[in-house]
Amino acid sequence: MIVRIKGAISNCYLLLGDKPVLVDTGAPGDLPRILSALKQHHVEPSQLALILLTHGHSDHAGTAAELRARSGRPVALHAGDAALARNGANGVLAASGPLGRLLRPFVDESFQAFEPDIQFREAFSLEPYGVRGKVLPTPGHTAGSVSVVLASGEAIIGDVLRGSMMWPNRARPPFFCNDVDLNARSIVRLAREGLMRCHPGQFGSFPGSELGRYLTTGGNEVFELSGEPV
Ligand SMILES: [Zn+2]
Image (cartoon, rainbow, N blue to C red; front, side):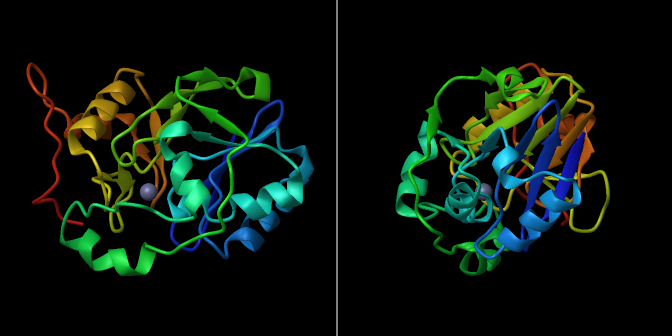
């Protein structure tokens, strides 16, 4: 089961498999919301098998240091984003459009720095952590962005795409993307998983078929970055 925990500006997800796994930790200040969601689902922080970050931005890694201190459980982050965690800073935030430029001053906050306990570069299975699924590198938004692909056909995709602010079940390009071509290839990689449902870092979930709107076939993949209503 996937539980969405709404942070101030982004989503975290609690995976309730044989063991509980937390995916993302929200922005600085989101700790009480996360602890209250864990409590609601009868999960003690110390019971978390893993705290996995989809990437090292402040609205996903913002309370990782505090959660690790409170739970004693390991935090996993792709090596490509380890420097962000070490510095407690977002690094480059390349806006994908006018909205990103508008939002950047509000979301570009620093967070408590930490050294990730587990740093990885390749895909790996979450079975040892009690979850039927895998972690798949999906870089582009940041160098170390990853997605969690579950055996149920659902995926937690971080900021590869976001949900719509206005329309349920719709995907939108992320507000920020450091490497648009690489992100496009990550969308292709996710589309190949034949996903039923995607759970983004921002706003609501959407069907896997939405990934198809950000692909073209038979040539270079094209990523729609402009001209889309919010
Ligand atoms: Zn991000």
